[in-house]
Length: 130
Image (cartoon, rainbow, N blue to C red; front, side):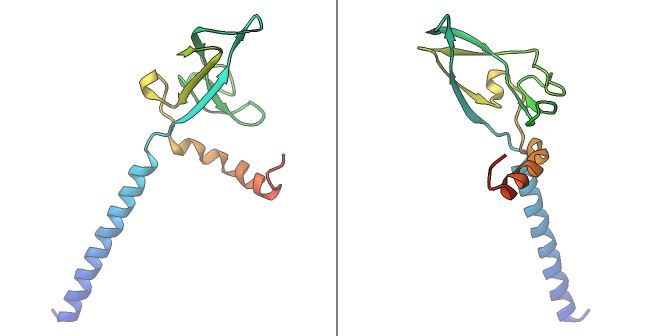
């Protein structure tokens, strides 16, 4: 076999493996769980609540008819999840990490947001105004 052919074959072999490694690295990164903080305020009879709060979370589309994610995967077509997440509420304030599997939530994966891309494109067309 000619030396230049061997060199080209080796180069192609290493390029193929490098591309495969990059592809697998991107796949692994895309399947990482995502979390984001959500905080709010709870009042009971007009006064800040103190104690354990029982919360249900779902990410739905603008019309509330499509569910992208819920804390227990029970929400379908914008319906309320059946399970709840417990969080301490102090002086009316709470903070929850949406997608936190240690709190018993379903993982929030980046692939769930692919359906939101048309909405983001619409925002760009309308300068962020709906």
